[in-house]
Length: 75
Length: 285
Image (cartoon, rainbow over all chains, first blue to last red; front, side):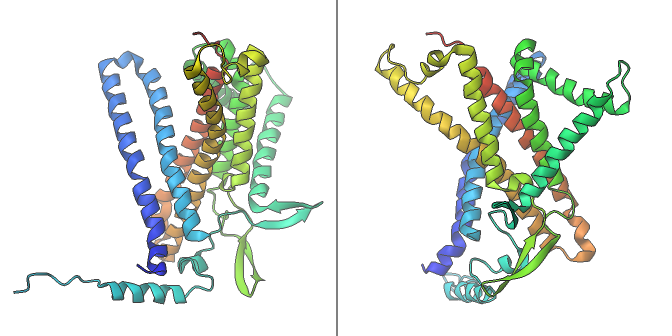
């Protein structure tokens, strides 16, 4: 493939593949969180807080991929 | 009957489309850059005694003035039966303190960490929300640079500049170390990282924890910068895609940016709080 084609494809691949892992991770965290809340509704605030924290950690990876894609595209 | 379908976009067709798009640019790197003025780093507007003043610094100064000024005005005349302004501020501050107590489980500890964490939350929240207002990113000056016309916006979201978020991350992580050393003593805190008394595995875990502290700085700064900058880019793209008559179609994206700004402020503050709690707990083996 030529350089121009690769240069157009690179940011798309960066964010596309980089968003795959975090998306699955956030889905799993949410699912387990909802299961835990369903099992014990009284502990919902505690579970919610920790769940949001864990989701933030997982989303950070997707944001790193997005920053790399933006750097490739605009710098 | 053809056994193999001819694909609609042959490789040479894609190549011609890409070269046609690239010929419209003056700089390369995507045709939309010329129409859309997206710059990864904040642009310098002027110099103040040798220090560059960037468009994001303008907005972060505005945020600081609003927060400190608002606080002064309300605290100047505190009454036992609060008026409207005082009760709003009490609602915000009391609500956040209750939230911190819920996360930590200990009100005294929440009061100790409150100044740092609440300041981080309020500063990031207000600067994110100001950065979505109309005029930010669109009001600016055009001037010549290296032969091209460059558009320099006068205002840019404070956290869309990696310098701001890196500074906030450094402040948070260094403050965590200071609080930990204050609570556990220098050797108590350093003993978590350089751990020679409990065997080789604990030694390597300590080294990893030390690397993790530096990773926290990177993670804090890039999470906040990535979210706010990506939001700005999204809004610019939305506004450049929609024709003027249908530009209200970008409203959901503005709402999304308000929501993301709130969530990122909350996440930054909560992570700082949780790291503070972990750093100030006594380690037991």
